[in-house]
Length: 481
Image (cartoon, rainbow, N blue to C red; front, side, top):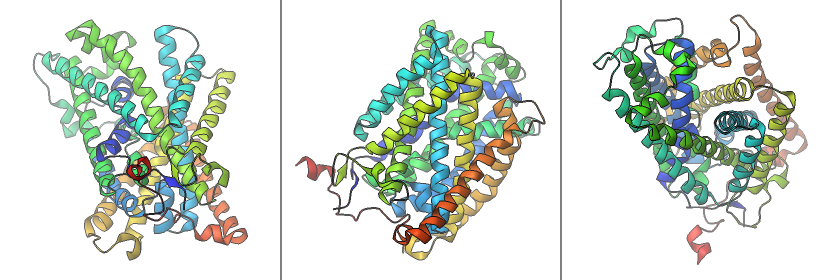
């Protein structure tokens, strides 16, 4: 029998939970939206979220269609291998490993800095504690992680809902202003930075594509992915709109830039100080669950690529010869990498927020946007054998084409305004290190694929095609019997 992940263990709701929890609504509310207003002064941030989410949803159509058809845990790797060629697949797999790992590790900086501020101590000590928690949960069965994520996500959405009630119930100017949705607010100098922040805020919605081998119904991957983008985009747009209304659209940028304003906690406190305290606690758990979601995706990429021997085969080692409750090799690999990177930043004395969190999260968001664009191109060029007999023009041609057009604009704005995300001086060349890292990673992946073609042609021939046959891995219900 072929070794594979535990089939039919994730419901459609579980898939959606993973994507939404990875995006972490509480992190976006308390950090992303406030930082965007403070940095860009764009009053039309709610409309920006709507436009960015719509564009990303178009990109997600082709990605979800390919992920559903292929059923491969290393989604981008398999999508490009089957749509553009095996060498492209290995390049995409390497970029995905860097991107997901960068985002996951960046959150240790955010968590450490947050807890050190609230409770004292050093940031790296708190980060080390979180490493242990995520490492332990990461090697457990996927359903345990899903339950944890679902509870924290529910609490996060509750806090966002309370924030909306508190803000809209007491508007700064005595009446609700709709300036946040005025198109004229987009024609400002900071719009590029706002778009970049918007893309970063949605990062993680594509997680369901890597859980397809464990899904009860493959078709639910598309609904969980695209629905996740639209729901999250709507939640963030409403939250940004509420923040503008609560303090005044004309001054929200200045208020957000003032640490003494306490946004968004000061708005929550209007309904009682305990709501603000609860939000602080939920924020910590939301960061941890976001780490766990990205950890799980990275582990599945390592497992799937090692199963095909593109990565060392030992990384696909598990406690079972046929059915894998969790990809332990990939999970342990991610934990070790996180320990090394966090340890390096701690020893170097780097700022956990300004350097570790900001730089690595931006690198990851930029990498995943590039992969989404490539996945849409792969969907348009996929052979009929991949598309299947029921392939429709919308998901295989029109939506991916529209996504590529809009996504190219988003990527150009993100790269051109990376300085806004990184907080570096205008004119600095430092932000261009990020696309260079991604390009170098892709080239290295292509070179490795070329080596496999020459030295191990049987491995090269199997790139992106190593998923078990339908009945090669027992279903969970059969194993339990």
